[in-house]
Length: 78
Image (cartoon, rainbow, N blue to C red; front, side, top):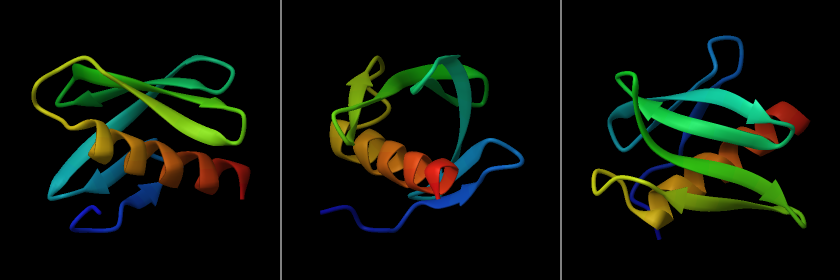
């Protein structure tokens, strides 16, 4: 279980989680690149009703990226 709950800012396309701000950059429908300070750390893909994390950096865990994705998709679909 993650230590904190992600906070989503849809107009600015950001999610704050575990003390860091992640920028959500759309790649395709239901697919986003997740960046920290302009550097990609992974992707989240919404498929079959869930956010599926794809970690691309040792700077983030699959659990954290999944929580960010779930919060993001809940907010934009909300």
